[in-house]
Image (cartoon, rainbow, N blue to C red; front, side, top):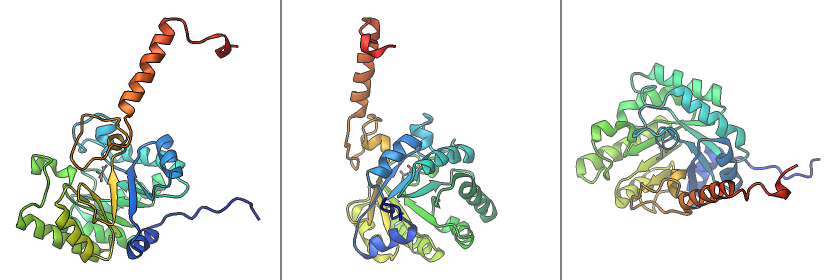
Length: 271
Ligand code: KIV
């Protein structure tokens, strides 16, 4: 028998049991092999290959431009690094909204080509047929309600969503519909904490919050924000755990200085 201890992999069942047992769920985005490996080794429960790659990896101002093939490229890199965590992949804008057949084809392409474990879609009632179709094909689906960045042109702004009764009521109904359609979890983005608490308590599936307060069943952040790589983005909900922007710039400035001054490479750093 191998002396190595077998790693217990996180599955969608694990995530659902965590809610039942009152254990909080940790989720973080990643888009490449090296960071995904670090996050998996650090014990993250879920890596989200978010379409925020459009912003933080490609420099677009919204998530809309990223393509399905680009998402698959990022997802493949993350999956290669994964030993333990669950890998969730966003279906990008334009690849599921038109009808459920297209949505299923996109989900199948992601699953076949990336080796990831589940997909994530934004929206409620308007995408419910797609969610059902994907789930019935055996592909687990994570929902996403509240501030759904693929709809930024409808919202016109990134302010907190569902502060009014009408939008809050739609969100409550959508959350229930997504659960009934078979979603295994739902992201709640930038909504009042009291509403997120109410929705989380009303569902049997876990909620993962971003700017939705501490009563969600789990939390997610974008890696570039929490590691301080992207310092222009300073929403109230963000906790920054590192200041990589400063550290990386400092290291590169020192490297440039060392080359210019002929300090690098020294005698011990050559053959
Ligand atoms: O794309 C993304 O990073 C996301 C998170 C903000 C939840 O959807």
